[in-house]
Length: 219
Image 1 (spheres, rainbow, N blue to C red):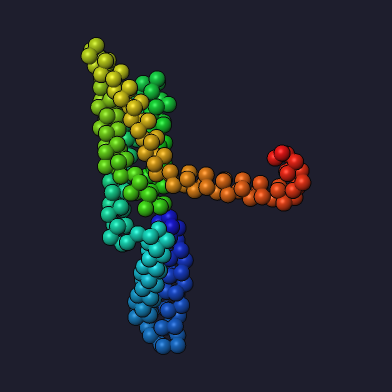
Image 2: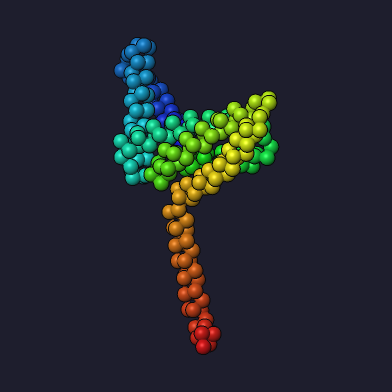
């Protein structure tokens, strides 16, 4: 679940329980204001903690990963987010109009992979090359490209380096596209399977409705 939505749900449950706890402590049990408030806060905190544990357990069971695995994946996703922020900053400081589409594609693909992995952590294992190699390469390359392209005067050698960097970024974009495809490859296979099943069902239905006509066509 989205962390913000999870927080809202826990708050939506915990706040009424805190209020109910305060009312029970203050009126039926006759506690004074501050002790009742302390119990109310404790009740709300306990409710929030229990709900958080239950939500985390449900999330881990749903995605079939252990708590240790999730900590490892989450750590890498946090680091990747920082790298993608750097990448975003690098790409938008480059003023070269000819590479606008290339930069948009790079950012779109990297954010797409990150977003899918955050939503479904198990996809991380299908994107390890992206997280441990390709993302680092594209961040470092765009940082150097941004630095060189920002210089007021460029030598012939610098100009050649910029051209080579653009070509390398073209190749890296293709590599990132392959990373994205690899992350969703199971979904593509499942979709193709469902299409085959649907087509088979349609053909069987046609055969059952028009058996004589189909027999004639096969002849």
